[in-house]
Image (cartoon, rainbow, N blue to C red):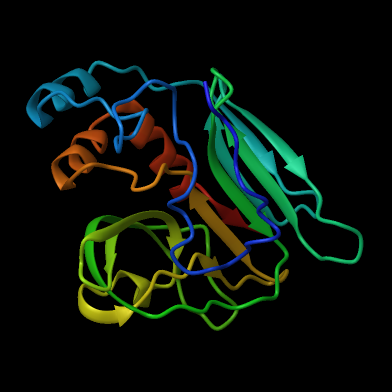
Length: 223
């Protein structure tokens, strides 16, 4: 198993930075995602229908404002930044000890990034989250390509609706959404490049892990 990850606070809020670590287990073919079941989409979809809804727990950030529901077999650990730096990071880990998702709360930095070509694979409303200016952040899963289009990064988390604009020369993904207590960043932890191709990415969308991660992100609530 490989659950290593780079320092979150050292790389916080860099656009498109979600494609550099490990999601899921070990031993996948080179360039693949260890968590992805590479069976045909129709087969994976049929299997996913058999999964029972897991029992859920609730995690609430220390200041009491932001909460989310997650499978009871997973764990959440809290990491504080170096002294003098605001924010708290919650890292969600599966029952095998693999880091799946990072959520950072209380940041004041913004996003920076260049133009990309984007293909949106999935999106959904997040009814429990509303930015101070009234904007409603959304859940998204997308593929972005840079330069000559051969380098593809997969991003998944909450974002401003503008980060789900499809097409060429659009602004790169921003994983920071403003909140009343400073801001929330969310990133699912992928390998690089994450998936060998779009078909493998779509197959993963039919698995239990994808369904659970999406449900967790959509459950985010600000009180």
